Image (tube, rainbow, N blue to C red; front, side, top):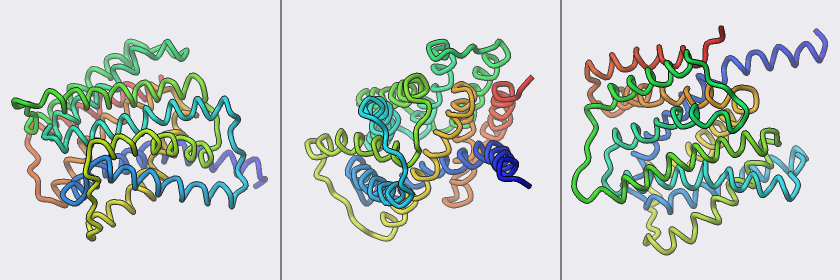
Length: 295
């Protein structure tokens, strides 16, 4: 087999494995947050996480002699990274830290495929009627999965707004990256994006939190998983899928995340899985299939 043929085979297998691997990795993010929450302030944990990712990816980029983006591309990568990382992760972590239920947070964030589908023409993509049906069906499935965890009590207006900000951040960042900088080296590009997120998050953490972090075993394990798997693995896979597929198809895979997270939480923490949740998982899979399946 020649080198070009091996490259084609490798790309084919990566295209097939990337979506399920991304879904699994992304779903574990909520488990890492749950493990770290009692031991660290939300933004403080993210500051350490961003710093760890920058250190890791800088080493990889230097060892591989990866090409660095130009000044203009650095600006675009920074804007996209602040949306995808700083606004999204910061908004979700802080909203849950301040009392918003995980179910409500998951439901709000999983409005992303709807927004992406509506705004897809801005990046030159058209969404078919079948895909729109899948987007709506997937959202209905997510609602069933998280229905038993929904809750909105008094005094939660600020956490709710923060979670909406997270939704707008990841949606806007994803579309911005697809529009202005779809191609970039994943190593040096992530250095720029996480350095920008660190620069934005650090002063906010300094002003709003005591910056408490207890390096207990759960914190260390959550940090290692967040840096090496969630970020280096999950974000890289998402960027790869954005580069090789439609933004609507990529974002719709996130509909499966709450279902998988519920199953993981049942297996690891003994959380209950209701009949509505099981039904919602089936509805969600049907909706995602309508979006991602080729004619």
